[in-house]
Image (cartoon, rainbow, N blue to C red):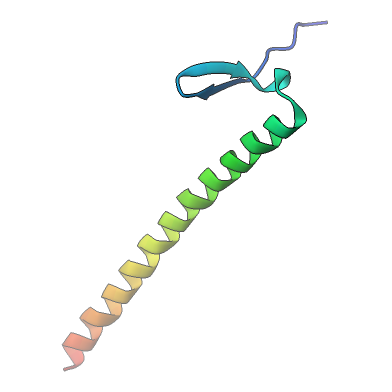
Length: 64
């Protein structure tokens, strides 16, 4: 059977392997990854909201 490759985790330019971390350390890594995804999604949603708001402002200006 093939050798399983370990998943690298880079923290402060230091490489660790996810599989070698304690359960508590793994949980922290997972929380950080989840928060990164949420931040990206929040920025995307904010961009949509700002664009939508500007569209309504522009439409109101035309109506005035």
